[in-house]
Length: 312
Length: 312
Image (cartoon, rainbow over all chains, first blue to last red; front, side, top):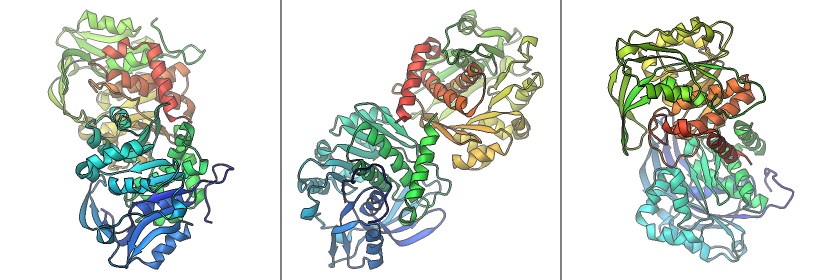
């Protein structure tokens, strides 16, 4: 077992994570990274692994390096649900960030083995109490939920693409989601509301009782029946690569809820602070490098700094 | 005496406010306002008046309406320092906001009596312990400080214009300032740093021990030797006119410090929450209307909501 942040005396519940596993080529104003480990499932799982046992569901191709598998299993992530499809290569994405890092262009994308991928949950995963539907198509996200048993707490991410090309599927998924996480531009795209305080409640009407709208460097807001909660982004002075920040936030959030074993208002608040702290690690290096090397004491210290920043 | 938010059992210290008094024509995507009361000193003083006795220094022209004087004195603001220059009209500004309210253009500006104005402090104002240098030229701000006696706590605002055309004057002023407040685009203009966590410390090196960088709807950050502090913006669902939000923040901040009678880290934190709450009132209507009508219980309620939003 890898080291974890200890949040409670109870045994942490496990987290199931589904999403993409990818090799990325990334160009920022400062540097380039080639064929680096990426994909939503990689970031989400690594972040979650700092808080709770993590089960990863996804697919990799014949080119996927044993050393990258070792990086995931090295953090104690269960890879039983990771399919190896030897008929093709791993999903590949290339992107380029603009000067201010606020915009990025996709310069190349090859679905490869992801094109015909249908997630299959191993039997041992089906009753996992916390399920993270990372950013894949909403129909695949629904397909994963169909395979679960019991009533897991379901956290889902999405992206602008699905709001454009698979809106009906997404709207069918949302009533099955407990907590939907998206960023401010996506919340505007989904609801037509540019004001997040109007967009949040509009999304709650689509199904999820709980909504978190992320505003990047400006923090994140929870819409909860018991009240709003706001958490700033952890200060970052050496931004290297924003890729995976949202996924790391998502993973840490789910990991903390699983560690605490509930999804109360208070647990969600605690989870958001850890999520913000963990996401700030990811952006300080390319790929998952900084996240992997972070260590529980660095995450805890950043979390404590963040809490101090908003406390009297 | 007008009603005030009671923050402490001590008698509040007075606040001295210098800035512009103006008539504004404002056009937003939703509505228009013509010849409405504006100017930095008006907003700062009205906001401060909810917390501490407020002394206003500025100039108005022959067209300034008695009813507008009554609005200021109706909030208990001392107008002994407000000059009436009958040789011309009151400073006039016209501006138009773009669709998202994040940009505005100045469409007309007439300095009128402000053109040759030199602030003169009445003798009774000279030893005011809290001094707010609202947004006027840094040489006029320095001229006001020259007339003070003792060691007041000095809070200063500025704007992009002075950073462009009066940078040397501003750099001469800053070492005399205890707390400098500016927004994120101004902090980048002043330091060349787009990352606020780098810009803040860079501004501290220019003189002020304390710096607050405002990020509009995304909240504000205090740079303090004892640590960063972050306060979100109070949620606003019915934005009408952003004009004066920054000035209202500034006034409430100064008012709270004066009410508490010190500028400790804790007092600054408390002041920032009230500043955020008060500024959110201003933007819900044109001019100072909503701010004037707010009432202490509405400000207190919004402050309490804001504190709840960040607390566990």
